[in-house]
Amino acid sequence: MNNAQRPLTRRDFVRGALGTVVGASVLSEGFAAESRSVRSARVVIARDKNAHKKDDKVNPIVVKKLLDDALLRLTNSKTIEGAWLSLVKQDDIIGLVPTFGAHKHRNPNHTHQELVDAVKASLVEAGIPEDRIRNAQGGPELAKECTALITMPALKAHWLTGLGTVLKTYIMYSGRPSDYHDENNAKLGEIWNLPFVKGKTKLVLVDALRPLCDKGPQPDPRYMWPYNGLLAGFDPVALDAISLRIINAKREALRGEPWPLSPPPLCVAAADKRYGLGTCKMNEIKVETIGWTKDLLI
Image (cartoon, rainbow, N blue to C red):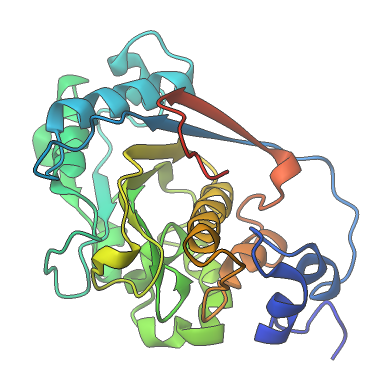
């Protein structure tokens, strides 16, 4: 088997990627070198230190403002209606894809309902009929019914895939989620290329209001903190690369030394080089910030 065909392994990741977003050696050694034009991606980070109230509950008014700010910046639009209509059509069947867990039980490490409600209300205000907006988290039939998807994962580490954020959001669409656990998380990108998924994702919104940097998806207050932000973009790989950078930086800050995720999130590099879903290279990702900038961790 030549290098172009060899799958990414834990050894590849450890050798070149500990404490970083994506190891350069993983990209160069795990795959044959190839000539590529310079790519680019934008990630907007909108934050407000008041996104949480004193009782640690999320402030829905602030969440709506963060959503509006991110949408306007990302689409370069002057109005929220214009922003949404640059992404979706009024006759689309729009699937919202938050992370509520396989059994839809709620815990603080899944997408906040306040964000889901804000997105739905904003779409309706933009003229999208409410009956054309639905929760599309679940099996493949839900994705097949939709013409547009808005993925809304929570920012978190995950004990089965290393990182449980953007690329993992569609794992239930595979019909066999256990096939993508441990080192097989490197294959998560193939789900995004399934015929009934490919090309449907119009927006990626990462719920970074209260991330989890270890032991996910179950909540553990020791590893949760109020980042108070949303990450927005169109490139799922770039969003996961930035998400991984934030998670790794927080883990290192807690331990005072590099603290690698286990299993390593091989999916990020593979989504770029193997599945062509976007870029994971930091020099190709433009990060734009709005609002509160303390401890950005990027």
